[in-house]
Image 1: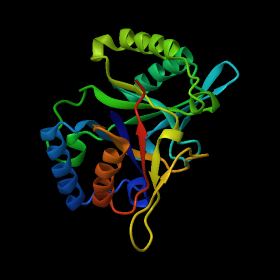
Image 2: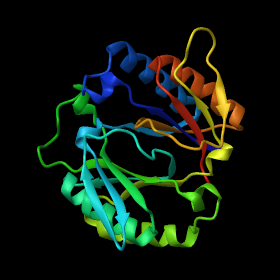
Image 3: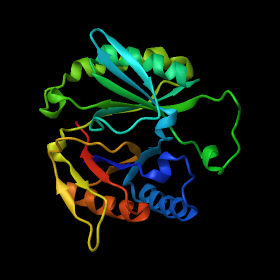
Image 4: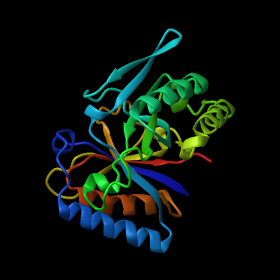
Length: 242
């Protein structure tokens, strides 16, 4: 089974401060271990909301709001990771994707690249950058009624539009939050996981990992280690559809 483990922002992340080197080192070790044993498939971190954009449907159009912004409806139904030459291009593609998929809201966020962390030099000023499209949940997706055919058709349009820049790097739909679990910011004592469904999710997404393990219990065990590296961030575990 595949799961999406996502962590939410904190004040330091939203301020644009670089992650502590201890977190970078320990998360890197966890990821490397996961790559070796086949648990970790992919993952990415997002820049603060000041560098993101939201597309919300109003009548027949999707209106764009640039960040920074506070959390609103941050419960996901699906996501896609693409390469594009600029934020403007990414938003344009996201608008077409939202229209074709019927999504009521899609958030666009640039992915943190290795050169953003100072790990390598940026290859070129014009190198294509990765962006995440975060499709927000609605009543239909939470009821498990979203159209797979419509979503696949929208993704095919996106692949065709992005072919010159490398296309769609990843795209997954999520099972309703009723099949997920959440770790709220820990208080004194042991961390406690809460079963879904979740009526809302107000915390902005900071990053995610896709893992493959035999069961939800195994996913939570891995996510507990992930959360321990981060510290006090809220963490959700969601089952990937299909």
